[in-house]
Length: 347
Image 1 (cartoon, rainbow, N blue to C red):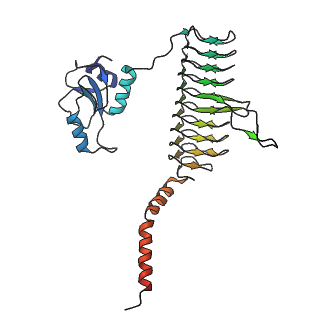
Image 2: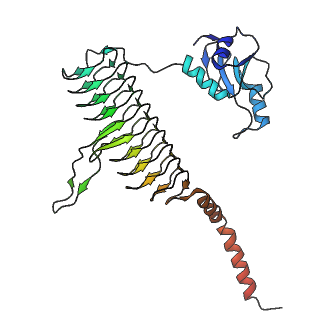
Image 3: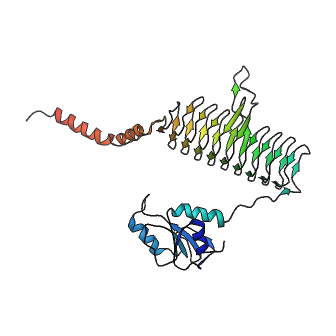
């Protein structure tokens, strides 16, 4: 990165205070930023009061600041914007470092079956295996040690990071991003009891991932027993999420880390799930539902509702119950005092 303050202002539609020719070569947080770095400072709120924001502005050594329009400019170059964090993110996308991707073409160490189809603009990295019948679309990249199984379809502009496994017959749309260590299309957890122990139930379906889905590191998405497991357009999964067989996510769902979903559970559009939440099988989570972290969801939810706790209850009721639980100690003391008063003989 090597830009001027004027170039930053043009990128974020901001108002310059200071020298437009100020040169910036880095991006950093407000506490660690140095004289050549760009940083950002929000307006007071969300845990920061006016005094702490003023102290931050006075102490930072940043070369320039993306600053909320409501704040007074410090004695250093500033670009005033309506949303400093969003503006900083825009600069990061345009000027920040990016993860290296395999160049177009097939690395000499990759093994690509003659029956596979790889677009000339796609990149297949070192030690990747691409099986027969697989297809990789334009400008998509498969990083080192990836595996693309038989009859897998990968669309355009997808990015699979190192050690991603996409098993047989699974399908990815366009602009899908899958981080390192994910397994797409692992067998679902299905067994039938018998006299000699549990016997595996065949898992013969597939996984379908729609356009613009992003999947964090270490996730496991099970193939369907029959038909398909499906992730809806624009959905985003954090690290270490597990989706069981035949799970279906609507468009634009957001799952934080370590969420676990049992088989055949379905989600509507725009569902938001906190970290470490768990879902039983064969339920439906309505559009726009919000699930608090570490919640255990045992039944279907209506659209637009919020849930928390394990087992989960409506969020407002559960928060009230938690507050009352913390008052139990005081209630016990009051009851004991009343009991003692009742037992004392009348004076």
